[in-house]
Length: 128
Length: 128
DNA sequence: TCTTGCCTTGAAGTCCACTCGAGGGTTTAT
DNA sequence: ATAAACCCTCGAGTGGACTTCAAGGCAAGA
Image (tube, rainbow over all chains, first blue to last red; front, side, top):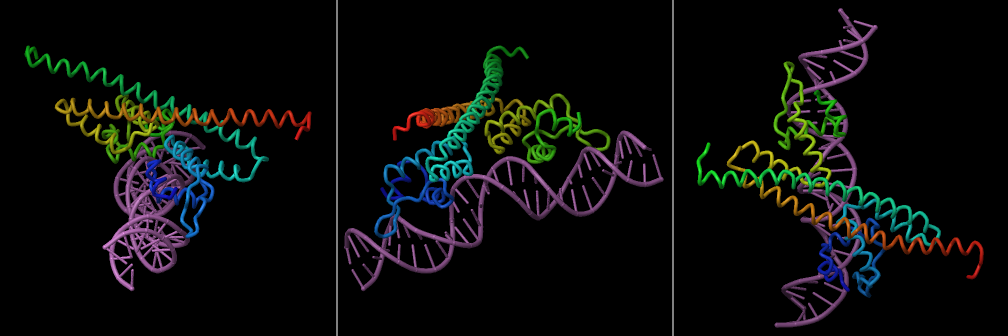
């Protein structure tokens, strides 16, 4: 699958796909005879994983670290595991922060709903 | 309360507090006789709200827009309400993305747990 | 064969949200 | 009364993550 098709399939620009590969977030992508990128299902999986992590705010540096460990083979399994655990915990913290912000907005919105109701009411009885 | 105390209380640098005020994320803070910032409880509340929203990734531009509407008074109530609703919905979308990433990491971690178990086992019976 | 369009690289540019430094006034402690 | 530790403003600098640009190679259709 060429770069444009992958770009469309995952909603990531070709520039970003090349950038991810250049800095080492994803391992070197398979090339065809003319040197064009030809993403295998495994390459695609890296893209998908990266997109998922980036959407969640995992930093480029962390992803580079993970990919580097991955390419170093079996002896890095324990390191990869703790890296992933750490990121999962960070994600959970972030989820909690987002939920707190959402709840705070909902609290404010309750106040607005009331004020809007008062505005409506005032159309009918001009009490103030 | 002076800027340093607020900085400590909310874990936001003094530079950032000044920056937020400068660009209009929070309204002008009360000053003392020598022109130093002296945060009232209401000023603090703006800081706290801003910190909560920034932690959740709400952009500076959106916060400026909200504060501007706020300072324009009652006639912007409806606009503020829809701005807040939109942000709440965005936060929910982001929460969903983070949860998806977290779940994906947990899936990967299940795989790692297995491999680690195999490594342990191989210490005792060298079957491969 | 010429054109259109996608592909390549490397370097430079952009955007966001701070963060820092310079230069200067104020308050507090000795 | 003078040094240390605050505070102020303004403008420039930084870091992360792209994004665009420049210059050129290859490929399929008219």
